[in-house]
Length: 116
Length: 113
Image (cartoon, rainbow over all chains, first blue to last red; front, side, top):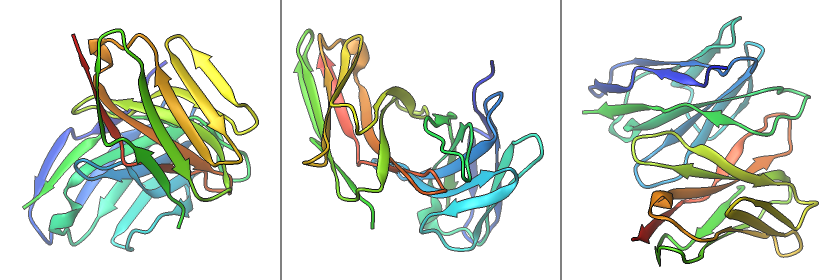
């Protein structure tokens, strides 16, 4: 059984650029959630994808967008990067979603994004 | 806005001691309460979790105590070891269609040898 993987590990961008982060969910999991973790803080929910559709969204602007693919892997896209977007971006996978309750979310190692 | 409040911010205990971390939540629309352990540069790893219909759950050296009426829950680490030194996050899972986790602010635990 493979765990959650994310790429790249680290990324440096400049303000105004666009970035795409990738996540492969744990084997058998069909739901992917993305979180932003600023330094010294707890993760904040960005959005969740279930069966290729957005299933819920936190308090993040529309320049944060995502995709989920048929193999349940996912992308997080951030446009018009701002300095405050510097953070660890975490992907979590789980089984279920939508009207089916999901409980345990398993996290990947994260992508460290630095915006200069 | 749903919130989970966690304390203390940092904790130092001696090897073999008991580490206690507390959390409180405000919204009743949570139905699953996990604790995560995070080492520097790593993603959070699930440690132990509890549902609100259970008052206590124990797994090895880790115990969650849950008080539904007070909307509080805590993590107890017995016989704390230097390898337990990490940041611990409590979290609460919303009961809606989007099962999102709301995290506490974290507790940095240091276990002295």
